[in-house]
Length: 332
Image (tube, rainbow, N blue to C red; front, side):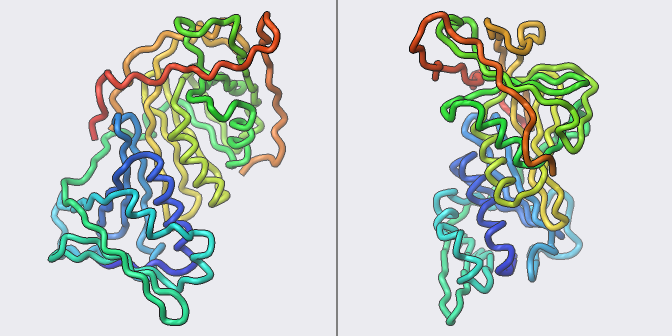
């Protein structure tokens, strides 16, 4: 395997590595005939994220496999995410200082070699030890989801800015006329009199694409979503969200650039739609096990509705119920 990343694409590849490092402690590289897959899975197996870099993304691409390639013979090289971050730690200046980056497989030493060719003849070489395993295969497809919304990254960032940075989960309620986003609250744990409910309502015309055929309310963890949005903000491209009823996986998808594709598959928490009305003071939710998982306007014309607590000087609750990790795990 040998891939040569030109200077213009080094920051994109490095930012993808950084976002995957926020998902899991290990990053997998899977070279195929005409594309390079870079994947990560979190420790609870409730999220899988991957980037698909087409052969045109590289100045030179060779997966190193003999022709013809046998089915299901794609190798998978598992690397430490921390070691991968060291290669791209000076990401902001790499496109100015680096001419190209070569990723090469050294089978004899069980290493993936990153050679960063800088200007003035300086070459930085990183030898990362790998473990070869069977490829990660996801049997799920976003095409099975009933709902899809697409918007520029700025809209999603404006939504998150309306909530505390310490918030762990959000609940998304979709109806044919629009969406509402509120902080996820477990009524069995949080005292509704000591908690502030924040809800943001968005009309369908605030999205580039809005296809909602099923009224649902889904709750999900924000950590993985923030990792995807960080990449979308860096690239400044639109992001699509595919989702179905609560308890089924949600897909974050980006394919506006013809040279690469981003997919995040995130598990959701089962929640009763009847208890998730917009601005509900109770905010009660019934949590079940996680299911099996394998550009827009510059200004957002939406408001935040707050349900104030009965006592003064009450701070927003920072406690939240995280998705259960004791349920069924994802099958890839």
